[in-house]
Image 1 (cartoon, rainbow over the protein chains, first blue to last red):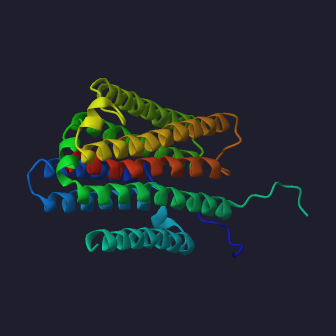
Image 2 (spheres, rainbow over the protein chains, first blue to last red):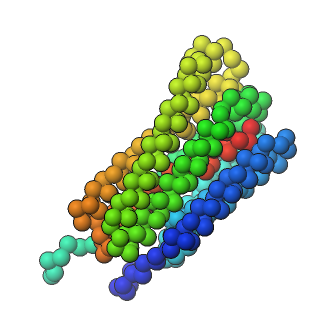
Image 3 (cartoon, one colour):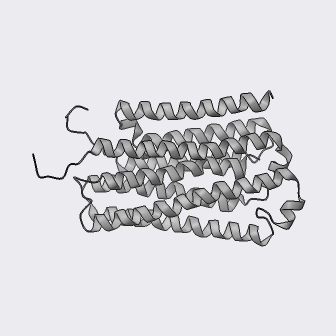
Length: 96
Length: 200
Protein backbone atom coordinates (compact mmCIF):
# COMPACT_ATOMS: atom_id res chain seq x y z
CA UNK A 1 0.00 0.00 0.00
CA UNK A 2 1.21 3.51 -0.76
CA UNK A 3 2.51 5.59 2.10
CA UNK A 4 0.05 8.42 1.57
CA UNK A 5 -1.50 9.75 4.75
CA UNK A 6 -4.93 8.16 5.11
CA UNK A 7 -7.83 10.46 4.73
CA UNK A 8 -10.39 10.01 7.42
CA UNK A 9 -13.83 10.91 6.39
CA UNK A 10 -15.84 12.58 9.09
CA UNK A 11 -19.58 12.18 8.60
CA UNK A 12 -21.62 14.97 10.17
CA UNK A 13 -24.28 14.32 12.83
CA UNK A 14 -26.83 15.81 10.45
CA UNK A 15 -26.13 13.28 7.74
CA UNK A 16 -26.14 10.38 10.22
CA UNK A 17 -29.47 11.55 11.67
CA UNK A 18 -30.92 11.76 8.14
CA UNK A 19 -29.86 8.14 7.51
CA UNK A 20 -31.42 7.14 10.85
CA UNK A 21 -34.71 8.84 9.96
CA UNK A 22 -34.73 7.12 6.54
CA UNK A 23 -34.13 3.75 8.23
CA UNK A 24 -37.10 4.34 10.55
CA UNK A 25 -39.35 5.36 7.65
CA UNK A 26 -38.31 2.20 5.76
CA UNK A 27 -39.01 0.08 8.87
CA UNK A 28 -42.50 1.59 9.12
CA UNK A 29 -42.94 0.88 5.39
CA UNK A 30 -42.06 -2.83 5.77
CA UNK A 31 -44.46 -3.20 8.68
CA UNK A 32 -47.20 -1.47 6.67
CA UNK A 33 -46.57 -3.48 3.47
CA UNK A 34 -46.59 -6.84 5.27
CA UNK A 35 -49.93 -6.15 7.01
CA UNK A 36 -51.71 -6.81 3.69
CA UNK A 37 -52.26 -10.22 2.20
CA UNK A 38 -50.11 -9.85 -0.90
CA UNK A 39 -48.75 -13.40 -1.08
CA UNK A 40 -45.35 -13.61 -2.77
CA UNK A 41 -45.20 -9.85 -3.26
CA UNK A 42 -45.03 -9.46 0.53
CA UNK A 43 -41.78 -11.45 0.63
CA UNK A 44 -40.28 -9.51 -2.29
CA UNK A 45 -41.36 -6.18 -0.77
CA UNK A 46 -40.01 -6.99 2.70
CA UNK A 47 -36.67 -8.24 1.35
CA UNK A 48 -36.24 -5.31 -1.06
CA UNK A 49 -36.73 -2.86 1.80
CA UNK A 50 -34.41 -4.89 4.07
CA UNK A 51 -31.66 -4.84 1.40
CA UNK A 52 -32.11 -1.07 0.96
CA UNK A 53 -31.78 -0.57 4.73
CA UNK A 54 -28.69 -2.80 4.81
CA UNK A 55 -27.19 -0.75 1.97
CA UNK A 56 -27.75 2.50 3.88
CA UNK A 57 -26.18 1.11 7.07
CA UNK A 58 -23.13 -0.21 5.18
CA UNK A 59 -22.67 2.92 3.04
CA UNK A 60 -23.05 5.58 5.74
CA UNK A 61 -22.93 4.15 9.27
CA UNK A 62 -20.09 1.80 8.28
CA UNK A 63 -18.43 4.43 6.03
CA UNK A 64 -18.19 2.05 3.06
CA UNK A 65 -19.11 4.85 0.64
CA UNK A 66 -15.90 6.63 1.65
CA UNK A 67 -13.59 3.61 1.93
CA UNK A 68 -10.86 2.71 -0.52
CA UNK A 69 -11.46 0.49 -3.53
CA UNK A 70 -9.90 -2.59 -1.89
CA UNK A 71 -12.52 -2.78 0.88
CA UNK A 72 -15.34 -2.06 -1.55
CA UNK A 73 -14.22 -4.84 -3.89
CA UNK A 74 -13.87 -7.26 -0.96
CA UNK A 75 -17.39 -6.45 0.21
CA UNK A 76 -18.64 -7.03 -3.33
CA UNK A 77 -16.88 -10.43 -3.44
CA UNK A 78 -18.41 -11.42 -0.07
CA UNK A 79 -21.93 -10.45 -1.17
CA UNK A 80 -21.55 -12.23 -4.53
CA UNK A 81 -20.28 -15.35 -2.73
CA UNK A 82 -23.37 -15.33 -0.51
CA UNK A 83 -25.62 -14.76 -3.55
CA UNK A 84 -24.05 -17.75 -5.38
CA UNK A 85 -24.44 -19.81 -2.22
CA UNK A 86 -28.16 -18.91 -2.01
CA UNK A 87 -28.70 -19.26 -5.76
CA UNK A 88 -27.14 -22.73 -6.04
CA UNK A 89 -29.02 -23.93 -2.94
CA UNK A 90 -32.33 -22.96 -4.52
CA UNK A 91 -31.33 -24.46 -7.85
CA UNK A 92 -31.04 -27.73 -5.95
CA UNK A 93 -34.04 -27.35 -3.63
CA UNK A 94 -36.59 -26.17 -6.20
CA UNK A 95 -35.69 -28.57 -9.04
CA UNK A 96 -34.92 -31.68 -7.04
CA UNK B 1 14.27 2.42 13.40
CA UNK B 2 11.80 4.52 15.27
CA UNK B 3 10.78 3.65 18.77
CA UNK B 4 7.16 4.57 18.18
CA UNK B 5 4.70 1.70 18.34
CA UNK B 6 3.88 0.55 14.85
CA UNK B 7 0.30 1.32 13.93
CA UNK B 8 -1.32 -0.03 10.82
CA UNK B 9 -4.65 1.71 10.51
CA UNK B 10 -5.59 0.30 7.09
CA UNK B 11 -4.53 -3.21 8.09
CA UNK B 12 -6.52 -3.11 11.32
CA UNK B 13 -9.65 -2.08 9.50
CA UNK B 14 -9.13 -4.59 6.68
CA UNK B 15 -8.80 -7.33 9.30
CA UNK B 16 -12.04 -6.24 10.95
CA UNK B 17 -13.91 -6.27 7.65
CA UNK B 18 -12.58 -9.74 6.78
CA UNK B 19 -13.93 -10.91 10.14
CA UNK B 20 -17.28 -9.25 9.42
CA UNK B 21 -17.47 -11.12 6.09
CA UNK B 22 -17.23 -14.42 7.96
CA UNK B 23 -20.04 -13.20 10.23
CA UNK B 24 -22.15 -12.35 7.17
CA UNK B 25 -21.62 -15.88 5.86
CA UNK B 26 -22.50 -17.34 9.29
CA UNK B 27 -25.84 -15.57 9.43
CA UNK B 28 -26.25 -16.06 5.68
CA UNK B 29 -26.13 -19.82 6.31
CA UNK B 30 -28.93 -19.48 8.87
CA UNK B 31 -31.01 -17.46 6.41
CA UNK B 32 -30.53 -20.14 3.74
CA UNK B 33 -31.78 -22.78 6.18
CA UNK B 34 -34.78 -20.55 6.86
CA UNK B 35 -35.51 -20.09 3.15
CA UNK B 36 -35.23 -23.80 2.32
CA UNK B 37 -37.58 -24.81 5.14
CA UNK B 38 -39.96 -21.94 4.33
CA UNK B 39 -40.24 -23.41 0.82
CA UNK B 40 -40.95 -26.84 2.30
CA UNK B 41 -43.41 -25.85 5.08
CA UNK B 42 -45.04 -22.51 4.08
CA UNK B 43 -48.21 -23.08 6.17
CA UNK B 44 -46.41 -24.10 9.37
CA UNK B 45 -43.97 -21.19 9.03
CA UNK B 46 -46.89 -18.82 8.61
CA UNK B 47 -48.67 -20.06 11.75
CA UNK B 48 -45.33 -19.94 13.64
CA UNK B 49 -44.57 -16.41 12.47
CA UNK B 50 -48.01 -15.18 13.52
CA UNK B 51 -47.23 -16.23 17.10
CA UNK B 52 -44.39 -13.70 17.30
CA UNK B 53 -45.14 -10.24 18.68
CA UNK B 54 -44.70 -7.52 16.02
CA UNK B 55 -44.86 -4.70 18.60
CA UNK B 56 -41.98 -6.15 20.64
CA UNK B 57 -40.01 -6.95 17.47
CA UNK B 58 -40.68 -3.46 16.12
CA UNK B 59 -39.57 -1.83 19.38
CA UNK B 60 -36.36 -3.82 19.24
CA UNK B 61 -35.82 -2.71 15.65
CA UNK B 62 -36.20 0.90 16.76
CA UNK B 63 -33.75 0.36 19.65
CA UNK B 64 -31.10 -1.23 17.43
CA UNK B 65 -31.36 1.36 14.65
CA UNK B 66 -31.05 4.12 17.26
CA UNK B 67 -28.12 2.39 18.96
CA UNK B 68 -26.46 2.16 15.54
CA UNK B 69 -26.95 5.92 15.09
CA UNK B 70 -25.33 6.61 18.48
CA UNK B 71 -22.41 4.31 17.58
CA UNK B 72 -21.87 6.06 14.24
CA UNK B 73 -22.06 9.46 16.00
CA UNK B 74 -19.49 8.27 18.56
CA UNK B 75 -16.99 7.77 15.73
CA UNK B 76 -17.68 11.29 14.42
CA UNK B 77 -17.31 12.68 17.97
CA UNK B 78 -13.93 11.04 18.62
CA UNK B 79 -12.66 12.21 15.22
CA UNK B 80 -13.56 15.75 16.31
CA UNK B 81 -11.80 15.21 19.65
CA UNK B 82 -15.00 15.49 21.72
CA UNK B 83 -14.23 12.94 24.42
CA UNK B 84 -17.14 13.50 26.78
CA UNK B 85 -19.64 13.39 23.92
CA UNK B 86 -18.03 10.17 22.64
CA UNK B 87 -18.47 8.60 26.06
CA UNK B 88 -22.10 9.69 26.29
CA UNK B 89 -22.87 8.33 22.82
CA UNK B 90 -21.27 4.97 23.59
CA UNK B 91 -23.29 4.98 26.82
CA UNK B 92 -26.45 5.57 24.76
CA UNK B 93 -25.55 2.65 22.49
CA UNK B 94 -25.04 0.31 25.45
CA UNK B 95 -28.30 1.51 27.04
CA UNK B 96 -30.19 0.67 23.82
CA UNK B 97 -28.46 -2.72 23.78
CA UNK B 98 -29.64 -3.36 27.35
CA UNK B 99 -33.20 -2.39 26.37
CA UNK B 100 -32.99 -4.78 23.43
CA UNK B 101 -31.92 -7.64 25.69
CA UNK B 102 -34.68 -6.91 28.23
CA UNK B 103 -37.32 -7.09 25.48
CA UNK B 104 -35.68 -10.24 24.09
CA UNK B 105 -35.89 -11.74 27.59
CA UNK B 106 -39.61 -10.85 27.83
CA UNK B 107 -40.24 -12.39 24.40
CA UNK B 108 -38.34 -15.61 25.05
CA UNK B 109 -39.73 -16.14 28.55
CA UNK B 110 -43.34 -15.64 27.38
CA UNK B 111 -42.74 -18.14 24.54
CA UNK B 112 -41.14 -20.64 26.93
CA UNK B 113 -43.98 -20.05 29.42
CA UNK B 114 -46.44 -21.04 26.68
CA UNK B 115 -44.49 -24.24 26.13
CA UNK B 116 -42.86 -23.11 22.89
CA UNK B 117 -39.21 -24.12 22.93
CA UNK B 118 -37.21 -26.79 21.07
CA UNK B 119 -38.15 -30.24 22.39
CA UNK B 120 -41.16 -29.05 24.42
CA UNK B 121 -44.24 -31.32 24.59
CA UNK B 122 -46.45 -29.10 22.42
CA UNK B 123 -43.71 -28.58 19.81
CA UNK B 124 -42.93 -32.30 19.58
CA UNK B 125 -46.65 -33.12 19.13
CA UNK B 126 -47.25 -30.22 16.71
CA UNK B 127 -46.60 -30.06 12.97
CA UNK B 128 -42.94 -30.64 11.94
CA UNK B 129 -42.69 -27.31 10.11
CA UNK B 130 -43.55 -25.35 13.24
CA UNK B 131 -40.90 -27.23 15.18
CA UNK B 132 -38.33 -26.28 12.52
CA UNK B 133 -39.57 -22.69 12.56
CA UNK B 134 -39.12 -22.27 16.30
CA UNK B 135 -35.77 -24.09 16.32
CA UNK B 136 -34.51 -21.65 13.68
CA UNK B 137 -36.11 -18.74 15.56
CA UNK B 138 -34.29 -19.62 18.79
CA UNK B 139 -31.03 -20.36 16.97
CA UNK B 140 -31.02 -17.13 14.92
CA UNK B 141 -32.22 -14.75 17.63
CA UNK B 142 -30.01 -16.57 20.17
CA UNK B 143 -26.81 -16.19 18.14
CA UNK B 144 -27.83 -12.62 17.36
CA UNK B 145 -28.48 -11.93 21.06
CA UNK B 146 -25.04 -13.33 21.86
CA UNK B 147 -23.61 -10.84 19.36
CA UNK B 148 -25.51 -8.02 21.09
CA UNK B 149 -23.93 -9.02 24.43
CA UNK B 150 -20.44 -9.31 22.92
CA UNK B 151 -20.83 -6.02 21.05
CA UNK B 152 -22.03 -4.15 24.15
CA UNK B 153 -19.13 -5.57 26.20
CA UNK B 154 -16.70 -4.58 23.46
CA UNK B 155 -18.09 -1.03 23.42
CA UNK B 156 -17.79 -0.93 27.22
CA UNK B 157 -14.07 -1.72 26.90
CA UNK B 158 -13.79 0.93 24.19
CA UNK B 159 -15.45 3.48 26.50
CA UNK B 160 -12.92 2.73 29.27
CA UNK B 161 -10.07 3.26 26.81
CA UNK B 162 -11.58 6.53 25.60
CA UNK B 163 -11.77 7.59 29.23
CA UNK B 164 -8.11 6.84 29.96
CA UNK B 165 -7.01 8.38 26.67
CA UNK B 166 -5.63 5.25 24.93
CA UNK B 167 -8.28 5.90 22.31
CA UNK B 168 -8.15 9.53 21.18
CA UNK B 169 -8.70 11.75 18.15
CA UNK B 170 -5.42 10.61 16.53
CA UNK B 171 -5.67 6.91 17.38
CA UNK B 172 -9.20 5.53 17.35
CA UNK B 173 -9.13 2.44 15.14
CA UNK B 174 -10.24 0.26 18.10
CA UNK B 175 -13.33 2.41 18.51
CA UNK B 176 -13.93 2.32 14.76
CA UNK B 177 -13.70 -1.48 14.67
CA UNK B 178 -15.92 -1.85 17.75
CA UNK B 179 -18.49 0.39 16.10
CA UNK B 180 -18.25 -1.67 12.88
CA UNK B 181 -19.04 -4.80 14.89
CA UNK B 182 -22.03 -3.04 16.41
CA UNK B 183 -23.36 -2.07 12.99
CA UNK B 184 -23.13 -5.72 11.94
CA UNK B 185 -25.40 -6.61 14.85
CA UNK B 186 -27.89 -4.03 13.54
CA UNK B 187 -27.45 -5.32 9.97
CA UNK B 188 -28.35 -8.89 10.93
CA UNK B 189 -31.46 -7.72 12.80
CA UNK B 190 -32.57 -5.79 9.69
CA UNK B 191 -33.06 -9.21 8.06
CA UNK B 192 -34.23 -11.23 11.10
CA UNK B 193 -37.10 -8.83 11.81
CA UNK B 194 -38.93 -9.08 8.45
CA UNK B 195 -38.08 -12.79 7.97
CA UNK B 196 -39.48 -13.96 11.30
CA UNK B 197 -41.91 -11.28 12.46
CA UNK B 198 -43.37 -9.68 9.37
CA UNK B 199 -43.56 -11.47 6.06
CA UNK B 200 -45.03 -14.83 7.08
